Length: 386
Image (cartoon, rainbow, N blue to C red; front, side):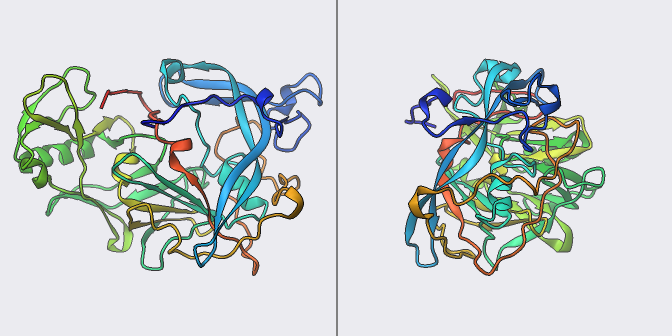
């Protein structure tokens, strides 16, 4: 978010905002209200230590750009639900996500879920991170025909998150023979976490192959950091994850360069941490340079190399802007997949949107609006001045 002003959303300053009432079908905590006409509350709890957010749900407009097959561009808006926080704790109190979080998961209230259920886009989206900490989100993007892919796997029998099965992994050309593992693909986590046994094998092999002097730096959450010359930074071993059908995901540059005062050498770290869980978390740093396609309709994760600028080269269909300033997608009311007893932003089973002959194009808005500063990790939160 370098060079960008951060602004908190205020419903009172928006002429199009409306509180979601407790009797709305999208209000999952409506049973806790004293009156059906009261504003709908929400409570979101995160895996990060003591991190939560609570407040009220607001309906407002999200302005998007629509791209046609011939790269023509128009502007549309859509109705979405916003959680307007009144009380934050944990990482949020320490400055995490100062401009807010955007829900991109399979839950009913996430932005892609609302857009897809209303028929505005197909039930898929892509996200692309470049090495300048910027990028693009495309709603409705199915990616390239040539992209690689792997299937999402259920968690306790349900597709409640973007979970994949990793069958093998390599550092450089060295294949590390051991059991596979499952991993969450989470664009809101800045860096990558691996089950402890997997982590140990990868970092030890990386340390063997890298041609640089190991060092430690106060304040760094990463154990494997190095002093190096610029030339050595060109010889970083790759890290490869292997999925079913021998589909490989290559992290070409798995390190992050630190800028420290009064430092004689270049400093870089392998931003992977151990997690004492059976599953891992694939964070933003593993996604850099890829167009990551979250195909919720076909329950697959796709990826292809991208500079994050080529946003009209996938499967694209035309979207006509709504006439008379009317919303193209009023919030759905009768097609909800409500899960009693769940938090308002808890994941729910991904819905499938019927394919329509008049299907619509991907919608895009700048990545920096919501994601650059999402440094919330699932187990612990770190901020580095890098």
